[in-house]
Image (tube, rainbow, N blue to C red; front, side):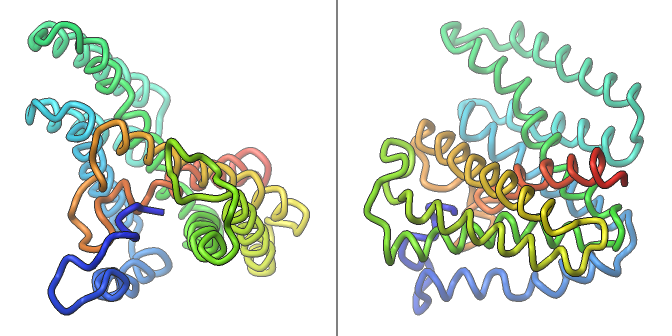
Length: 281
């Protein structure tokens, strides 16, 4: 869960919770329509737009001194996302990776100062498109599973159901710190509650997904739920080591795109892997 959820309201007259609701409420019907009834290209563009913003946010956190590198991080993330979503061939993905590697090499030579930070810049020039472009593309790929949109909803249940349950259960019953250095307010009780909620959500969804047996749903709920919590902590590490509270500010009350998809970017690949390699989509 974004650490932004614990901050006070940023608009006069609105509490933090009210601001989050006001921000997301108009988006819900639009996103649901795109998921279940919209054309494929529109959902792909939507996801690629999120990837572009997410890539920019990540580079802004890790290489804040260069706007050019932020733009490259955004563009390279979209490039990898396009090769996965639009072209869908090994040659295209391999070509995109080569361009990303070449770009990192060129940028390391063009912007060599400060030299002691060069390895960090190169690392994120390579890592940003893989994390943002690669992982977030799975949110679009799972829409292709039958029935259309239902598997995207499953990834959201696994991510945000766990996230929400962990937050409230942790507030009510939490006493044992889970990872105090990374996220001081997270507790083992909240984590366990979130994981249980992922399993329950996956089992409920299995009744609407013929390709997802109940036992598989339990396993997926555990694995994807744990992956989502790992994604949450991963983004917390990025923010804490960058000295920022939120990855961005595009969603008032929520923070940035990475704040909202921290868990989703990990549950979606896990769900895609199940659907592709086990369910046979």
